[in-house]
Length: 206
Image 1: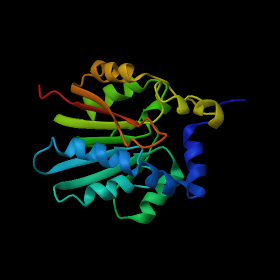
Image 2: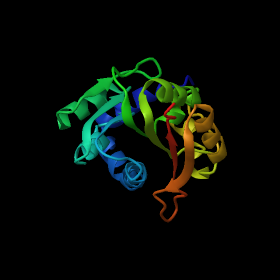
Image 3: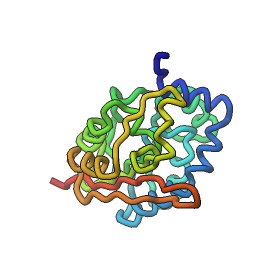
Image 4: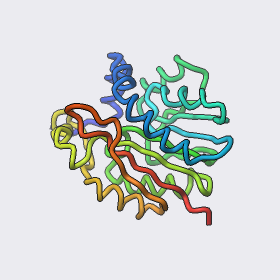
C-alpha cells in the first residue's frame, strides 16, 4: 500500500473534528514547552507556530501581553480553514519544506510536526538559518521517538511516513542544525505516557 501524505491525514482529522482532541491532548505538553521558552525571553517578541493545526497555540501566544504577533503555517488545507474560522490571526497553507515566512521571528514553536518529514534535521537548519532572529528560541515537541515504544507502530497503523529518532539523535540533530544551548526533556508526563520529547535551542547571535 502506498503511503499517504500526512497532510491528507490531518485534513481528514480536521473534517472529523479530531483537531479538538489534539488540542486538549497536547495542551499539557505545549504549556510546559511554552513556559520553558518564554521564561528565557525578555520583552516583546514575535512568534510562529509550525504545523499550527487549528491555530490554538497562536491564540494562546496572542494572550501573552509581550507577544506582538503570532502566525501559523500548516500543510493541511482543512486545518488552516479551521484556524481562519476560529480567529483573526495570520495563517498560511503551505507545504514544508518549500515555504518560508516573509520575516524572522524571536520564537518558533512546533508540536507534532518534525517527524513527518523525511529529513527533519534539514528543516531545523532551514528554520535556524532563515526563520529566526539572532538569539531567537526554538521549542519543538515530538511524541513519536524511539524511547516512546507505544508510538513505534504509528507509521504502519496510520500509513504515513515518520522519521524515528532517539532522544539523543534529536539532541544531536538540533546541534547539527546550528542551535546552541540545546536541551531535551520530557514534558506532559502522566500515567501510561513517557512524555512528549521537548527540543529547545537558541540561534547564535553571531
